[in-house]
Amino acid sequence: MGTLSSPYRVGLALGLGLALCAGCGQKRSQPAARTATPAATPPPVDTAAIEAAQAAAQAKEKQPRLGEAAVYIDGKPVGVLRKQELPAKLPAHVVPVGSGYESTLYSLTEYVTALGGDPRKVRAAHLYGGSRMVVVDQAEFARIGSKIMFSFVGGDRGKPRIDFPPVKLNVNTTIDMLSGIAFYVDKAPPTLVDGELVMPDGTKVTGKVPYAPEEQGNGTRVYVDGQLVGTVKRKKLTDDVAVAGNAADPTKFSLVGYAGKLNGDAKGAKSIDLIAGDDLIAHLEPTSAKDVTFYVPSHNRGQALIDLPKNEKSVRPVARISAIQIFVKTTAPKRNVVALEDASEAAPSANAGRGSDDEP
Image (cartoon, rainbow, N blue to C red; front, side, top):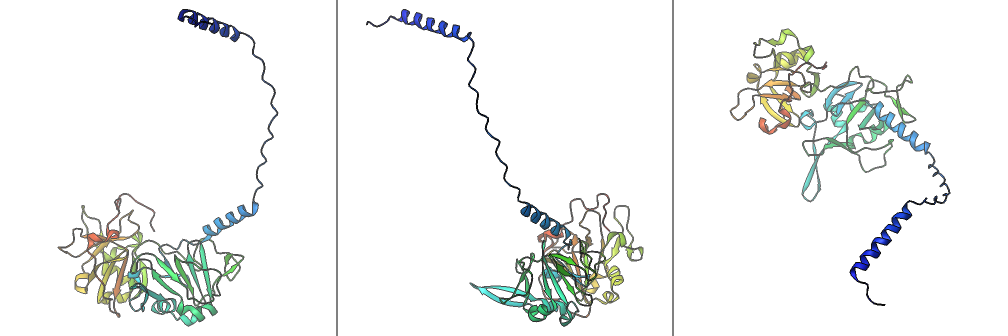
């Protein structure tokens, strides 16, 4: 058969197209019925896992809000685990850790002694690590309390961590990072019952430190010879330690005057160290400390802003202070003073003094 000419091929294609279109108008056949696919069976509910998760969440909610690695003895706040806030008389144990590095460790029993307590009378120590808690009872504390050490992740700064001795431990669990400690000396310690902390009278401990009337807040802490004597509270500042201000300046308060109200010995201070986080930002002798003033603005983490003595090296004359160490009968440890502009936590909050807040 010969090859079709182009016009003929075009005509044939048009004819086929018309025929197909005519077929489009015809009734389509119905598709065949499909067998319904049975619905997938849902996996069985793991009630045990759900209950375990709920129990863990409830246990986490019931843990007390310790604040910044706070330490308590019989419910009384006695300090915070920061290197610069440790009592000056607490021994430091420097041990090699290999490759030329060293670690500085502190013993729990020596810490109790430095806080003014007697480690032989400790009836229990509860070591908090987030939502977990290690219960060290009286017998175990007497056996290995001196060998339970704590340190700081950054050497002389950063968060505290706990180091247990490499021996068989008679405790309920272990932790790594340390978020707080509760020692019990004169008061009966609560115990663990089915994973929950229970007071001696049978009531469950929920959301607070046992025996604590109030938990450690974020205000500036005041120490005298290593003992925590109080926390600066904006709403509790009184006129008898106020220094006259002016329209452009808020009412301020005498640092030595306020510290003297917390502890009478503070008026005889031999020196005062001002701490901002992990940094010592000022070491004051009595002559330079007597005229230092402070105030506590709103929205500043509840911490005091202190007017530092004039220093040509500082570009910021006001600093936010997290702790004040006053030395009367003891001598301040030798440590480097950090330039104010290099101490990040010394900077006031951007919203400091703007409006009111609910700080106690």
